[in-house]
Each structure stands twice: as structure tokens, then as C-alpha cells.
Image 1 (cartoon, rainbow, N blue to C red):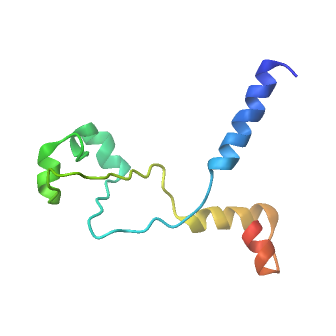
Image 2: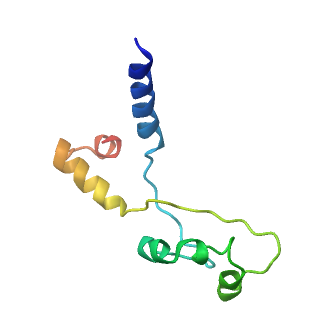
Image 3: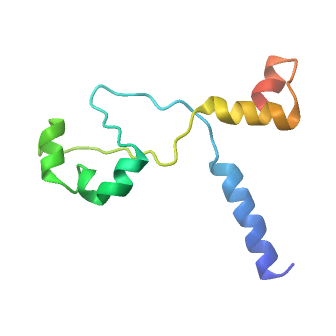
Length: 98
């Protein structure tokens, strides 16, 4: 197997392994920035880079933990696509695995 083929296989496995669907829990102090706003304002909207954004969001200058979610989409879109491509499964377990 040549190096390029091995890299293609590794890349495929990487995409499969990290494509895990789950529900993002909205926390009381969460900030949601739509991609369109982020594109137009760049880093100015990110509270860890902009003190004015931290103040606007009520984030104190103490120890803070940021969790960043990129590329979010409604989970049901993946489910609908899966059903369209593979058909609907009868059993709940097979449906979950699909």
C-alpha cells in the first residue's frame, strides 16, 4: 500500500470516528454567534478575544472555561439523510445503529 492510499484511508476513518451526533446542551450563560455574524465581524465577537464582548455577556474576568462548537447542524438532518440513503429500519436498535 502506498503512502497516499494509507493517508486516504486514515482520513476516511478520521471523518467517521469524529462524526458523532449529539445534542448540545444550552447552558444558562451560553452565547450563540451565527456563522454569518462571525464572518462579517471576525474575531470581534469572540469573548475570549474581546473585553467588550465579555462585559456585554456579563462574563467576569475570573477563571472562565469556553466550549466552542463549530459546524453545528440540526441532528434530524443527518437522520433524514440516513433514512433517504439506507431506508427506514424497523427495529429501534437497527434504527439507532443506522
